[in-house]
Image (cartoon, rainbow, N blue to C red):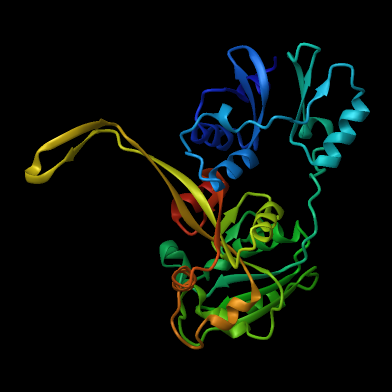
Length: 351
């Protein structure tokens, strides 16, 4: 097997969190599951996400969530047939097995298709709200001069990278909340003459929190819509997130990043009077972090108070109190890039 295939191998008793970490390291969404040298199946990020949504322990083994049937091809399958299957199902990799289910080859999208031929995605054509009204304090002193949405990453601004990701799924209607250096942001976009999307700005006269400015969109958005902070990248299939949102009939869906933290020390658990109960050696903790990316039903706009400071967490608390449905869609830690901090920004510009 090639080195490329060897890197994608994971043993069946590895944990789900280990599989997510391996995917992040390799920048892949699927792995090849083995029991020693015996090929068993593929595990995808979608398999892991569905398991987490079902409340399966992130430390459970990969074997526990393997699908009973997976798309693989026999050794004698013509190449053109393999190519058609991969194209139809937007398959990242396709295992080839012999009559005994031994892995004999793996086809990869980037090898089968032209380098610039991307896997096609469905067109959702939903409105997108980008929250760009903040002061960008975490990127000072740069944001004393340039508003955070316009900070360059390569040949485009931060916000244009976000717009491009949504255009990949047919979203071309954008509403952008602005406040700090609003005129500079609007001028920048007014100067772009060949825009293939519509962008409308709505201005906070004062900071309204992470959701308060949505009240300014009352009567403008009448369909399910995306909301994204202006300083995050989510490397995920947005159609999958949308499907989850609709399938579960959520009013609000939060995209979370699965974070794993290791304590490199023995930790002490005590009882009353400081009596030692037990010692835990180098424990691991897993959390789901709010990424700042949401799918929202339009009627929620009417529930946001006008001209009041109101965070998205205030909306979540309101819905929870009323026992209404909020969904959480998990992505891997590496699929969430918080560009609003220096360390991540410098990494993304290659420094």
